[in-house]
Length: 293
Image (cartoon, rainbow, N blue to C red; front, side, top):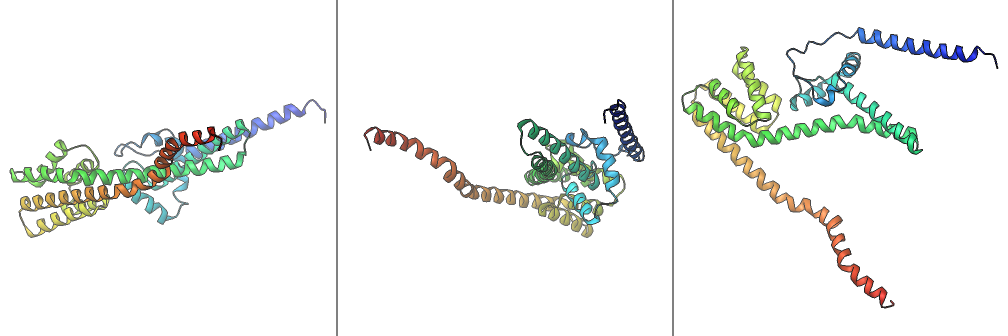
């Protein structure tokens, strides 16, 4: 057991194992085809940090994940405006990689503080795996709020342009150029690209409705398709749609204002009232204790 060749042999075996692992990783990475992103949007910054590992892992996950789950992820990415930046396999790969990174970070912190490493690693993996899904859900809700808020104003711009003599495509172009930045402006710009590429207007509008998945946008799209099919004038229809969407926005604002006192009830009872009672009762308790009771 004290032979001098044991330590060099172990070091050589460890080096060979590391070289073999590096060679296997290089072979796996070389088998991944390069993705042509010339017509795609750049991924979000959190995905850009790990983009090469995400692409490699997504290549091997694409054929092994359930098709229904991938379809649901693609739908959520489309609702979040990321269908031209990511696909379902890349999103799943990013969730796994962030989970592994958070698990390693929690494992290192647990080792520094002398805590249970496996438990911390499991918690870190679950946290990192869930963060991208929560971020995507927040992005979808933010886009819906922006769309609901900006839709009446964009419809007013389109109505003014149509009544001023422009056709629908020209009015839509002016609304994209002059309208407020946000999800709705991006989707209208994508609608213009589809129309310039030769897609029929009804089909492009239906695609817009599917990407947004909002009742207000669906009503607007259905009205436009019906008006185009029947040959009706767009000006009065667009003005009526703008008024209806504005009324819906005011009704939503009133509903949120009425829900605010109910939502404030728990913070009042749990945090504010106990703090007020402590401030008011503390001098009384001190006086009682000082008097000998």
